[in-house]
Amino acid sequence: MDGVEAQIAEWRAYVAKSPAVNGHDVDELDAHLRDQIAELGEAGLTADEAFLVAVKRMGDLDTMSREFAREHWGRLWKQLVLSDEDEPTRTSSRWIEAFVFAVAAGAAIQIARLAAHFPDEEPEWFCSTSACSCCRSSPGTSPDGA
Amino acid sequence: MNINKDLVAASATPLVLAILAQEESYGYAILKRVRELSGGELEWTDGMLYPLLHRLLRLGYVTTDWRTPPEGRRRRYYAITDDGQAALAEQQRQWVTVTRALGGVWRGPGWSPAALGEA
Image 1 (spheres, rainbow over the protein chains, first blue to last red):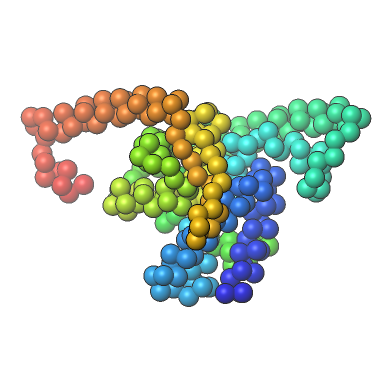
Image 2 (cartoon, one colour):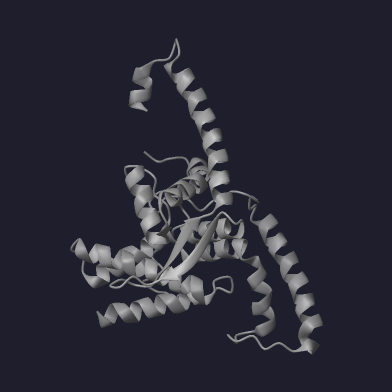
């Protein structure tokens, strides 16, 4: 089981890299993954197998991150300003800088959306894992491959 | 049967709201319920449910809180709000209208039920 814990930790770390996914989201996705692993385990899969299937069902992480970004675009600029630090450090002198980055980030998102022909309303992601090109090879096998 | 992607996306919000209207729930259980209700025909990419839930949260259609049952893991539960109930009722009206129209034409004269069976 330790092996799976390490895999889950690795997966968590990879998910957490997305600036649009916050700590609560990672916890929520983590709980989902563990529920799925537990159920597959009860169905007879080994821990490793259950992990791989659960990760596959969760879907392509880049696609998921993009959907989180569409919903939580307001989180993105903070990442630009605060670089890799987890804890926000607010100083008044950074306010202008933050604003400039926010505007730039907003513009970048719109450009990206136009470039990718994103629709504004309905997400495109509700495609089945088996039938859709958005689900590439399992990200669980090489989470750091990107 | 592969259900059209647009149709799956369009039905996602009313399905989630309707499931939450029956009882409070969390992501994993919602997905299981969707599979049950659709006889396994509606397959969502699991991780993508969460941006949808967060959108419903932003719209004020659901509320959320973290809970840890006595012998379970900590999970984020969602409950439908009055606004969510109203949105669900509106979606229901639209879907009933659409399915009634389709049902009418499919049962009408000149329609071959065999074609539907083979579809």
